[in-house]
Length: 305
Image (cartoon, rainbow, N blue to C red; front, side):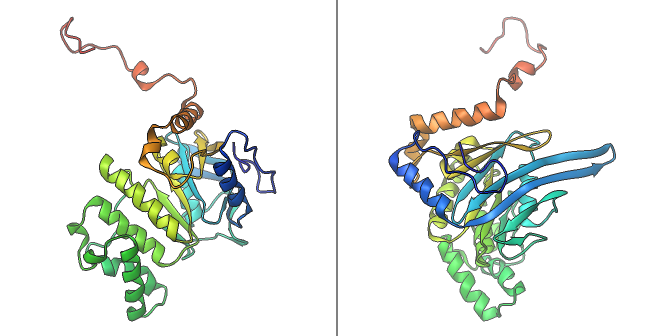
């Protein structure tokens, strides 16, 4: 459904006939924007005691300026490995990652990353955590503090600038992590299951915060998730990956209008997109419940279904 699940060469625009005029126009504008991130036939092989294991096999796609792309797939498909390669934390075994016209060869301020686990420094306040990257990048303490306060306001935590991480909720900690990642004004924000440890209500709130922040910040987002509803709700496009080895199954253009609203979660178009993703990932595989052994640990006749 997307134009870019092949190589990194120029490809024709997609067919918009299955989308509303508004959605089709939005995708036309997206594909006219500059390409910020270009993943060119990226492969990754890990050497283990039992021999080489291929984690990624020739992954190629392009992300345009201010696009929000989600990456989904079954366990073991290499979603997090891909994010770490783009971040420069791991090196590809083959292929290249281009940020603009420059090849990624390690971490850099042009990419920010937010992890699932809370990565704040517990001995630093919210303000000091957000200041950290700015100071490391060479900003004076005064300049770093001014910029950090602005980003703390952007994520709605201005009155908590002097708080320590242990005084914050999980969602608030992740908002601080987002502010810290954005403070360096990266071109790409990488998010690896950032809301996975949150309860359902807080997760929904954080999705709303992310969309609000993304709307006002000039950044391209690559968001790794295992939650199909989250992917459909957030993304412009969704990269669907298959496992063993990790490979790109399809690039799905989300046919929902923006701005996204919680009411869309129950719309026929949302549900149809989710079912399409589920079919791509699981296909006709037998569900886990059908694979469980047929043991009985209760008295016969004591059924719950």
